[in-house]
Structures are given as C-alpha cells and as structure tokens.
Length: 283
Length: 342
Ligand SMILES: Nc1ncnc2c1ncn2[C@@H]1O[C@H](COP(=O)(O)OP(=O)(O)O)[C@@H](O)[C@H]1O
Ligand SMILES: [Mg+2]
Image (cartoon, rainbow over all chains, first blue to last red; front, side, top):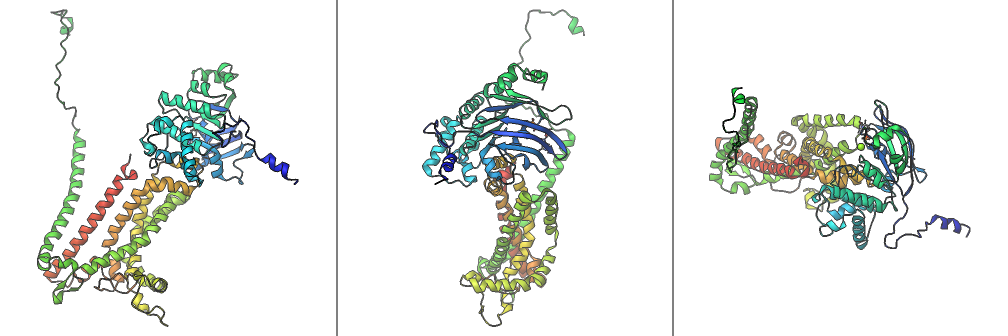
C-alpha cells in the first residue's frame, strides 16, 4: 500500500500527446561535461562542455577539422569504434552518464540515434525493411499491422512517404541520394530515439531534399532532441534554437568558442571570432 | 606577324563557321609508346594463361579419344579398375572424389567462416596481422606434410570419432560401417584409411584459401553500413548478420567453391591415407575409397599406353569438373556486390 504513490510517480503522464502519434513525447536532455578526445596521441577536443536541453535543436558550427563530428560521435558512443580513439569526461542523458559501465552500449545507441553525412541505407533491404531495420537489429518484436503503421508514420515524419508509398518493396539503394538520406532519417526515427544526432545530413543533398529535412527537424523536435552539425549558416539559423561555435586554433585541440541562443550567436555574438565566422569571413 | 599587320581585305566578312560532319569522330589520342609496350606485354601474358589452359584441355581431350572409343560411356559408369581383365571405369573413384571433397568442405567451411569472421571482426588490431600470417603460413605447408600428419597423428584419434559417429548415428546410412560397433574389442581397422580421415586432412589444406577469400570480402564491408547498424543499437553480431554477411555472401560462396575445386584435385595426402577400393559406396567412415587423382598417382608408373590413355581420360574428367566449379565460383564472386568493386 505504501508503495503506491512511488509507483504512480514512475509512470509518465503524457497529457498533451496527440492521440495518433504516441510512443514517447519528450526528447531526452543531453549534457556533455568536459569532454576531451584523442586519436592515438593526437588530442582533438579539450574539455568541451555543452548543454543540449530536451526538445531543442542545437546546431554545431565551425570550420572543418575542429572536432564537431568527433564531439557528435562521442554523444552516442560511436567514437570508440575507431581503434585508436580515447576520450575523457561525461555525457549525461537525462542526468545519467552514458559511459557508466552499468549502461548497455546498445541501449544507449538506441536512445540516441544518428544520421550520417553520407546516406547509408542497407542496400540489400527493401525500403520498408530499411525503416524497420532498427527493430530487427535490436530484437524488438512488432505485429504486422503495427509494423505497417510504423513504416508509414516514420516515412511521413521524414517527409518521404508520398514519394515511396507505392514502391516500399524496392531496394533502398534504388532511391536518389536525397531520398536515401530521408530514408535513413525515417530508419532512425522508427526506433523512437530520445535524441537524434545529425552530422551534416544535407551536405550531399539537393535543395528540395534539404528543405524536406529541415521541415522534418521542425516537426520532430517536439518529440526528439536534435543535435545537428552543419556547414550552412542559413541552415543553422533556420533550424536551431541553440548554437555552439567550435574552433581549433592551429595545432591546438578543438573547443567551443561560444554557445548560446541562435539569435544571439548570429545577431549579437560576444566573441569577434564567432562574428567573423557567422558572417563568412573565415573558415 | 605580317598577317596581323596586313589590313583585312574584306573587313566585314565573318569568319566562316567550320563545317562539322554529323558522323562519330575519333577522339582517341592513342597511347604513348611506353603504355603500348606495357599493354602488349601484359595482354600477351594474360592470353598465354588462356592458351596454356586450352592446351592442357586439348591435350587431355585428345588423349581421351582412344579410351572413349574403346569403352564408350561405360568408362563413366563402370566402377572397377582392373586393367588385367580389361575393365576400366571411374564411377567409383568419382564417388570417392566427391565424398572426400564433401567431408573436407563440411569441416573446412565452418572453420574458415569462423576464422575469417574472427580475424576481420573480433581480433584486436595488434593481433590481426599475426593471425593473417598464421593462416597464410598454414597455406604454405606442403600437402605431403598434411598427408603424414593425417596418417600418423590424426588417424589414431579420428578412428575413435568415426566409431563414435557410427555407434550413435549408424542408423543413418551415411554413417554406417560394415562391422558391429558394439563388439567388445571393436574393429579399429575398419575405421582407418577412410574417406573421412582423408577428408579431414584435405580440409586443413583448403581451409586457408577459403578463410583468406572470406576475410578479404568481410573487411571490405562498407564502414557506413556498419556504423548505421551499430548506431541503431545493434549488437556486433547483429551488425555482422545485417551488413557483413550479406555483403560477403559472394565471397563466402566463391571462396568455398574455389576450395572445393582444390579439394577435388588434392592428391598426395589422399594417397598416403586411404586404402584403395573401387566400390561405389557412400560410407565415408569405412575403410577404403579412391579418388581420381589418387588413382592416377597410384597407377601411373606401371601403366601401359592404353592404361595411360585411360588415366589421362580420368584426369580429363577431373579437369572439366574443376573448370566448371571454378568458373562458377569466379562468376559468383564477380556478380556479388563485394566482388564488383563499385
Ligand atoms: N578516424 C580518425 N583517425 C584519426 N584522426 C581523426 C579521425 N577522425 C577525425 N580525426 C581528426 O580529428 C580532428 C577532428 O575531426 P572531425 O571531428 O572530423 O572534425 P569536423 O567534423 O569538425 O570537420 C581532425 O584533425 C581529424 O584529422
Ligand atoms: Mg565532420
């Protein structure tokens, strides 16, 4: 009897969830604390800290080679796939360190999805199978009608449903580059991540696909926290609420020069280097 | 110079547009001499391989004519090889050849697959090149050594395995041996010198090649797809099943068939281990079998010219079989995604 209130408090109450689109409604909050990173003995990030609040879009900007991708890959434990890679610091997902030995790495990556620079659908799988690949890979069972609903919802969220709904059985590799990237976004969304990391997702896309991806980001940010690396200043300004400017001075590890609301970074930067960069004067 | 200073005779006349023929034109500038020499030499070497293959096939084919004239298709269906009675046929040795190869592949395939997967996916980076060179070293062991190993070291152990298989699975004809497995002192010699033991020795010989081909294609599986799977929360094994194995499927099949081709022709280890017998039987655990190459090696020295032709005909049949298998293997590898080198 005495445990009842505790149990109740553990059950989240989703009051403002749209009736048709419920799985979870809140994105997770990410907090990177004093992250340093190495490749072998080459230090590429030094004590970088950044808060990425739930349900906001954080844009990471900065010149090439300053460690944005490395930082992003540390946020869902992809960094350690490189054999020589090392890191220090903490990444807190809703307050828990994802590098804590008690956390399963597969569970962490499922909760924090990733979209890569180069579209990477599974070429041997159909479009539909690509969307549900994450469920299969994580051993999540799903009924046939639920599966069809999930495919439609994920592809719709990624802005691809209308284009592919009549060809779901075709291989994923038969799509154009822009469509492939949106398929990859749908695939990530299908496992209902709390955070979605995107590493220059539009750098290889045509303008129409780029606009679709930006629309998708707008639509999903109520359910998913988004962190996006982009080289396109207009894109950063359009999609993000918060912005972090990375810079690696010659021969030194990368660091965040300035982070804050996007309007301030673009309209009223505190650091002259930020001002130069967002106005296209270097990098 | 003068042309520039001369006043134009017809100042307003426009430069005439060159007339363009509406036919395909040659835009090939031709090759520089050094490239021509290089191409010529390498093409000659490439063709000479074909010529050599053709010549061998032609030679064997011509040598087979007298045999086929004399024995007809009976040469393929007769099981006995008794030159003194003028009975010659290769059906028993064909069955033996495939039985030894089958045993070899059943053992080599899973070992090669596991070895290749371990080296390309699981072995720590430092350990990897060491393992690769160990597998290469295994390929460099001469087959006579594998034969001796099979005869002296493997056989005394393997007969117990064969006996165990017979005792527990003897109701399957394939595992049967013509003796009572439960007799008080069981007949050890009935299990020796068999296709099973020869097959194990051959499997050790073909394993390195199969493992090398598989490892090569596994290591080419695209990093983008690997990371996509892992990024979705897949385990390593899940990633291997979703990305590495489908990508490497062509290499797995091709590598297996290439080693099958080798297993079919393996000679010296088989000669050392088996005790020759010419019955058509599907009992690999039982003593006695023969293969085409073992037959040729065993009878070559004492052969009369008619028998020599018969042995070369047997060789011709083996040549054709291996040619077909290797060609199929090459086609599968080339058509697969991993072999196409996009
Ligand atoms: N796999 C790797 N191995 C070694 N060094 C790497 C690797 N990936 C990136 N680096 C180095 O880390 C630094 C940061 O790279 P990256 O994070 O990709 O920068 P960005 O995404 O901002 O362009 C660069 O100096 C790069 O050379
Ligand atoms: Mg990058």
